[in-house]
Amino acid sequence: MTTKELFDIVTGLTQENIEKVNKAVKKLSPDQLNWKPNPGVWSVAQVLAHLNEYGNYYHPTITKKLEVTRFTTNTKEAFISSPLGRSAWKSMKLGKANNIKRKFNAPKEYNPTIHPSIMKGNEFDTFIGQQNDFLSIIEKSKGVNIRRVKVPISISKIIRLRLGDALLFITYHNQRHVQQIINLTSSVNFPRK
Image (tube, rainbow, N blue to C red; front, side, top):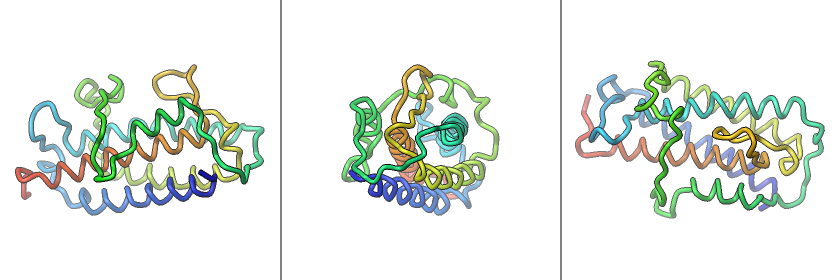
């Protein structure tokens, strides 16, 4: 894909994620936000807390990389994912029917059932704010070489992804969990109020 196509994908999906969460979550009551169909499934609030915790790591990490990089020339050529990067974002990508093709266990520090302290009580507002910040990060990324700037991943500072791969990974990870929220709120047993 070209760098322009990559930026169009991450910008478009992030805007879509904001719209979907606004529509599905904004007017939910605390009971609805915390409802779980069974004990092994996250509530809407827990899904948002999980995403916010990732944002707490990736947004400042990428912002710092953008501020200090010497690779300030953006290439106009095709963006080529690294094998690890492609594997990372493809594993997060939804199927054609917006289905989650492969389930993963969240790392412990990003799991609200293991670390309830990541639940702050303002998950919706934080998510919307972070997604708007992410749109700004995407815009700033247009001024650097997204193949040369490398971002350490959240579970290991040693392993780094190309910035383009990191942007795709974050976007598809967000989209995956936004779909999880849609599925929860569409459940026949979801509380009416």
